[in-house]
Length: 398
Image (cartoon, rainbow, N blue to C red; front, side, top):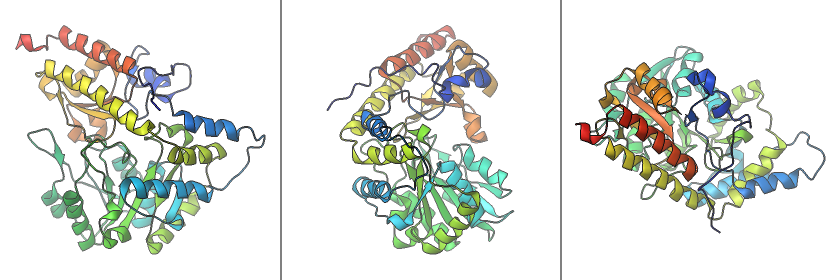
């Protein structure tokens, strides 16, 4: 079956967060929102069909997450990523961020150190501070080729006896890295040496572009499996964030019991009826949808690459190995972060995430969500190109 990603359903008036918050975030409704990480691409029909079928039953009451839903995800993880979990390892969660908060409480005490690797999705460091833990920032290193890597020496220098937890983003948001086995093993070695638990956010693991291959952190070795809490789900892969359902896999029984003490206190319950069927259908019925989607996303990124090549003195594009989030290096524009944000809002009429929201290491960068229909992506390109030309940023001016 062939899917058409050239157009998508209009989300104006649908209470979509990226549209309803435009004025609050950007001071105007007149921006095309390309910030929050959901897609302006229709959720696949096989998910919607499963929900419609469930609605034929006239009672929507309490339900447990069915075992078959966990089994569907487990089969997917084994087939796609070569890792095997058991149903008993799995817990339902509303979101990765909620799971992260539980992990911070479960595996550290007030004042203990928690490692984050910036620039990174802001709840990583905000959650640490909100739980009154000591934030240990291990910034990524940027290579000359615009690729980001772990700074292992910096990490070694910052770990101490009170360091209890590392929050790992894999694949990484916003820099788009797919960590290699060798890179992950360096992290693992340090965590094992210092008895550090790893919370691994792998929510983007299905959105990896060839020849890159996602390696689940827990799959590195039996020792890795014993210290890892893996957060996974359908929200990014199938554009299902609104179903508010993900999972946490914790194979180590002792860690799982510690996690459960906090989890039960919060009372996560079991999600909602429609989420259960949507979740299971996504994993069981995807056919060719995901592969075709990734081809489409790569096509959108290629359009962005072509644009940046026209304006080498304005925007440098970070290579993307995974996710649908482009990390734009705008430092050559010599604008303050405030002025850079205003350029995108007022001149390009685009609503992006400011790089500073991912930590001070994001200064001079912007994050652009390119998970759009082709028609909308072309609109983004046109608006940004016109704004850059207006600023005299084209190659002919230099």
